[in-house]
Length: 93
Image 1: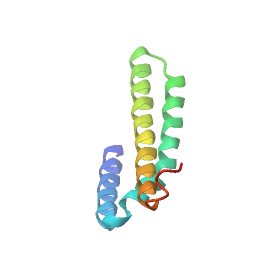
Image 2: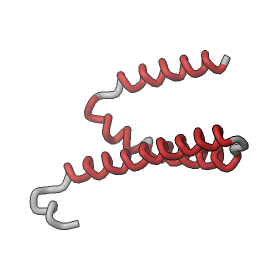
Image 3: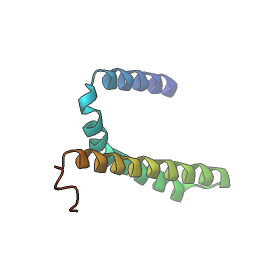
């Protein structure tokens, strides 16, 4: 049953992303960065609830991958915002 839910969620997600115009992909990515923060919290909870060494290792991998997603989202957002600065504004922070 969970495999069916996973497959349907993947198909719906793919369908939804392909319908978004290319101009909105970066704002959509930066908007979902908050959801990635929730993923980090979930991975941290899984790491603290881990009982065996293998489940601890998997939870730590989940934390690392979720953090890569969050940091990447912030980098993309920063680059997107830098595109909207004028030429004379680029020198100021």
